Length: 74
Image (tube, rainbow, N blue to C red; front, side, top):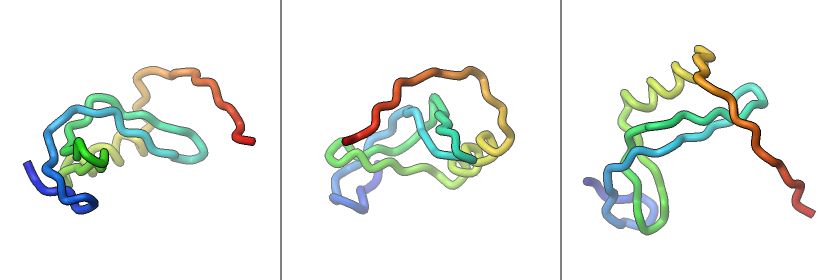
């Protein structure tokens, strides 16, 4: 457990789904270990986890594709 740099709350260990835009596509990475602040929602990753996320996204090792609705804000 560590301290959140945003709100100074105590983080908890969780498994999350991380999302990132890459080459005009929204990529989701499931089952990512993270420290998450339950107060403000800020997420923290170890350097090893962050490296593995980036390598996975850049290698295009996609396990499945989801279709999601998109609405334009007006």
